[in-house]
Image (cartoon, rainbow, N blue to C red; front, side, top):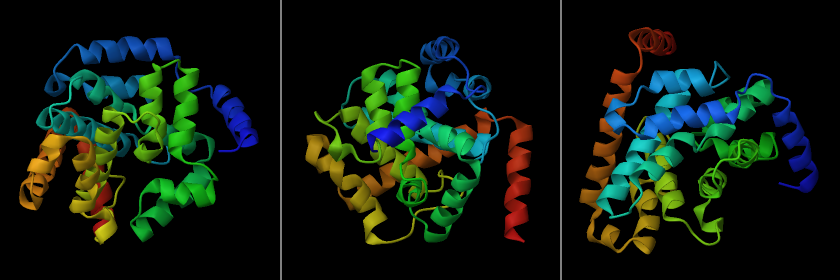
Length: 258
């Protein structure tokens, strides 16, 4: 992002009246982190830091929860310490989507529509339509909220972990969990295209270059692991969201299936 765009976007984010102050959010997240992931009241967290946007509250947080749980599960399997940090990074990795959905509602609607049609990650379309990605706007919001630097960098680099210097284990785990969740049905209303670039093999590959334990998995075992982790996250998401929200989702799905 060029400096002029950065300054303009920063000023617009500062002017957002309906984004809550970070201290209130941090107290809620600290409370969240003190619990086991299957005991977290996601709906209460949602009430603190989101509202209806272009994406839709439930869809956004289902993906956030899925990414958090899959990243945490991968960290456990690969011997990475810091389960709470991994979980929080996964939960907040896409906060820039909230920013873009509020500041640029019409344009971001076009972003989602094109991403769905092409079955590509949102950030690929954001660059062409907005000129920047949610990773970049998310980093600005993280800085305004004074999040820890490590967490801010996960938000900024989760789409392109290779660009982060020095590289971060947590960023890579969130990156893989993000793609796996999108690929396996916990994305933003569509699955990534079924091609070699988005296959589970390509999604898993970066882990092998960083975590020796990842090399012990063959295609069958890592595919089973990713599918299992996303499936478990999806089941948990069905339980943590209220029946009313689930009903709205079902009605939305039914209307699109006709």
